[in-house]
Image 1 (cartoon, rainbow, N blue to C red):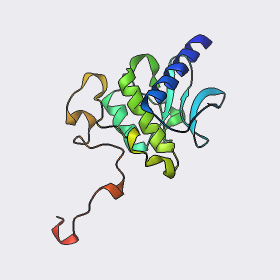
Image 2 (cartoon, rainbow, N blue to C red):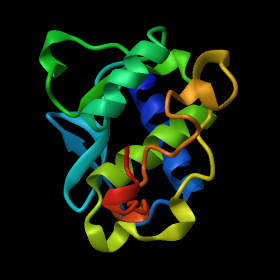
Image 3 (tube, one colour):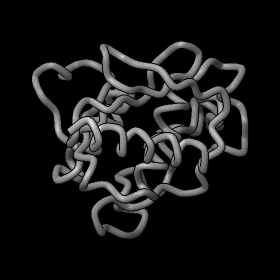
Length: 157
């Protein structure tokens, strides 16, 4: 069992390195192997089957609806910005994308502006394809309000 946890943690470290996430620290969170940025855990291996990622609550709800075979929630995580996922059910491409999102969610502002780590597009989970698969009309879930241009009040309906 410890070997499975170690293998999952090695997978997370490899994917974080491939994604080019700066400032990642190997550590523990509540006794579990974890990756941290700025002292904050953004992903941890809970057990031989479960990885827990940091995520915004809106994005959490979307993932729970879109891919319940990968993402799930227990009472412990309700209302908190963490989401358990089944390690064996998620592919490397999507897990790498989720690691980038978790890193962006937890990283200090001075590191969040590193353009090389922003994903170009969101992979569709569990075999879904197209812009509708992400539930946001193809928009990145990582855009901040500052990135969007507001229309003048007179032209809003």
